[in-house]
Image 1: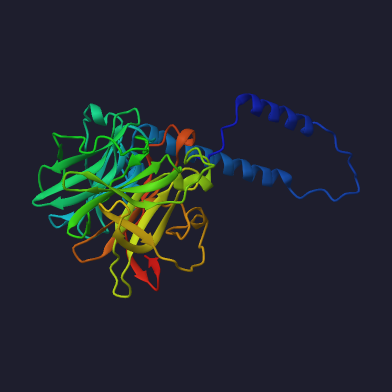
Image 2: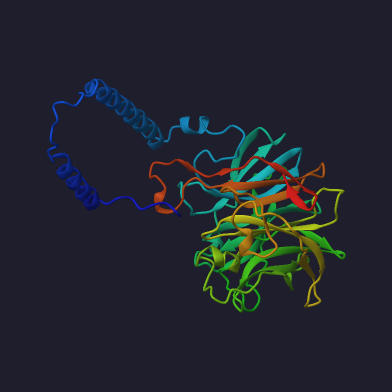
Length: 401
């Protein structure tokens, strides 16, 4: 993803031949020129430096190739990262049993995307983290393609994971699993999975994912799911009633993009699919507002936020989001691809996920990609990191952390 292709052997030979031809060209010597000072000594220094670097790099990769834990000990101490394998989106943060639990998209078998389960880390203070056993392993047939992103919430005495389950043919559905005990170390899938089997009309099944934690509106709880409406095409966020998972209309609609066939057609088409929605009321006394965070993927890979209010939707069945007009300077690329949006991060942080903790703080994490696609080194033992936790607040009309 964005990495240059590796040089082929033929191209290296061609370049080498050209370099050899250039090096054998004789330069006319002017014996009146001042001779260079000690070229042999500088050449030897460079030789020893490069040799030392090569031996060090070889040693490091050799240890990685043997599966040594040394690489894990050298990782950042305060960022959540798997001991080995792949990590992407943060999922389902929750405070339970006196601990913070943070989950993430995880491939235990390889340092590239695939075979996705939920990795798990716990902390008592948001500073020191311990890795726990992954959950949502041993997938049933409707989940052969992986347990994709989702949320965690409390329903009575139960802790419920609500997530996208896919069958390996990109036919996405939404599933539930309930924690077996207070450690949240294992979950039992709902016998009625998938709880949402298919998307509504005009929504491609492969563009239907990432359910949010519950949002309370007019006496009922809703979850919101990112999607593509083929009629625009445009990105949309769908509303579902958590009591029975009935479809309740569109929560948000991005502007239509008639010239875009899909979200991978470049940055201008990024809002055709709205990934990883996050809806919350920030902890603030300065303003009453609702935040809608969206992830614009493909070639853009930016998290953006809209600040607005929640009201009844056009279908008259559930909530909808109305963005407020505001004036702000664009801090970096991204907002121009979704009118009214503000970029959450200017770097590579993506697919952020937040929750409100027991102290009323809205805490957020994002995914920091390392490598992806064919550029992933074959000896890499781990790939992907989560940001440090950040407290989100609304100050003077801007979301800050």
